[in-house]
Length: 234
Image (tube, rainbow, N blue to C red; front, side, top):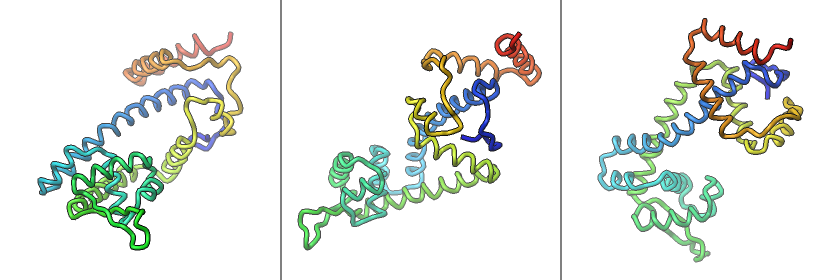
């Protein structure tokens, strides 16, 4: 993939690029943890902005997947389980289990088609509609925050981020050769490339953490030392 400047000829092993990759890997780990914490943050927002005790009680016990199913039904109702699974990428087994729980809680109800008694369609009840509306309000709030956050970046930077995310969705990190084959910028892996281990990752993170503590002057010194010791050919 091209770098931010559009250059596709960056040589493997470039110290500056390797340091940026390590920094990016650390950022991804933090982002994963943030997304996990965001589930609780979003739930707390909904609870703070709700005055119905029944909804609040449900939110305290609900899972993220349950809210996604309610959202799907609210947008598509009346809708069957197969359509929920297809349109929202939720496994059919999960849809079946969650809709049963939502039926028991009075969040959704069912109806049958006059000409097809076997097909069950789901609708939100008044309580379910209130949860759906609250969840939609949360997403609108998040959209405003995301938009304001991304406004700080230029069009070129946003294009680069978008390309990176789209590329990421198409590859498997555990199959480096498939990545090399997919992106022409990486012709092949060096013959002496060894598998990247958990120990390598820990050591790389430790070194990166130490370097980030240095001021600009000390960082230049460290760079010079590293180049002299490990990268200069005598």
